Image (cartoon, rainbow, N blue to C red; front, top):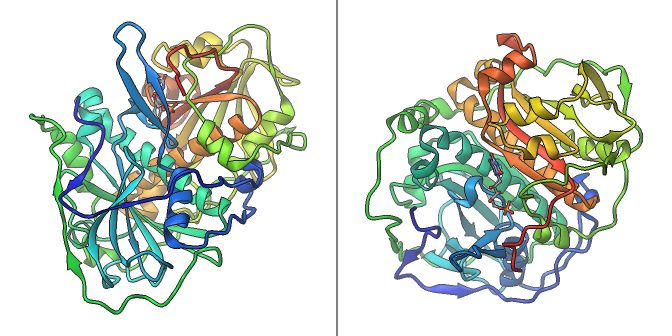
Length: 465
Ligand SMILES: Cc1cc2nc3c(=O)[nH]c(=O)nc-3n(C[C@H](O)[C@H](O)[C@H](O)COP(=O)(O)O)c2cc1C
């Protein structure tokens, strides 16, 4: 297993203050686009609050038989392997030097890789804070082999939403850019060759404590990327799909508009959503993946399901998210007022269309690689991605965007479930073709890209804090 933390060694490391107040705005409101207000007097406070609620360590687990303890983070990750790294550029933040940084989650600190006013190329943006999220595919591939590329993309979608929602909760807007020339961006940020740039996220807004930018010249410290493992196996199909989805400077002139997704309203109208006042900061930091769900009699309500589905339909702010590519299919096991069966969710009319009736517990678990969690949940999901439409709009790059969207929806499901007193788990392991057959999906209806489950979690004895 490669080391779980990337460090850029030999550079100045800046402290991010601890024990700050976390955003109090209710999580469900933030998920619905309400901006919070957690005023930060200076740049380090702002960055600390932002990262504490999006990328920091939030708990640990201990394996009872060996005593081995490992960290869990605010953003979830397939196998807890965390291929995603957070880099950021700042310009004109109060009491914080302009420069380029890498976030060190193991110590909640910022590694200063460059100091001064970095020219905003190739992102070309005047935003005071610009994040670059990267993936280290090897961190996933040593365990999941070729399939790891998908998990890296899902994890990226989760990390993006973790960041975007934390930003919203402390009162600023974010916009993600997926369409950029990969090699130029990697060069500009001087990434180690095992890190691939995936998303640029710009933050701006009145809550960002700003001053005039520094006028000094750029000084590069760079730093040495730590070696994550003594050996590395090449996964040529991962390198191939990554190459196929890369953009060059020439191909990057503008992003094309995608055809709109098909619409319907579904014959079952969802009731008004349930509400919750649980604060964003608490929900973001308490979110955990359920180990399993209590498969007994306890059901969730249709208003809870309505609230969970509603947050998936809210706009995502990204250059590739003008038209959406994911359609949600639900396996309803125990939802009061909704018969067991398979349903398709139609976001425009907040309705459900019944596809199959009857008990789906064995099918949902079986399709999810035999994982009982998908059968013990109150509701499980298949996210069906319209890869053809994405490719028509964005070429091969569209493959990434469909998975980013799936991860982003997954993150919204996690937070909504937590806010409503339920638990959730992302499920990347499923039998693709069997899902298509079971749902009677014609090839033009898309391909399954992600599974999910929500219910009442069983206690996890390994969880320590
Ligand atoms: C893309 C993705 C795929 C995942 N797939 C599975 C899965 O197939 N089965 C499972 O039990 N958990 C799965 N998980 C949950 C992770 O194991 C979990 O996020 C990780 O252990 C970290 O725990 P935390 O979410 O509580 O921080 C997945 C999570 C993500 C983000």
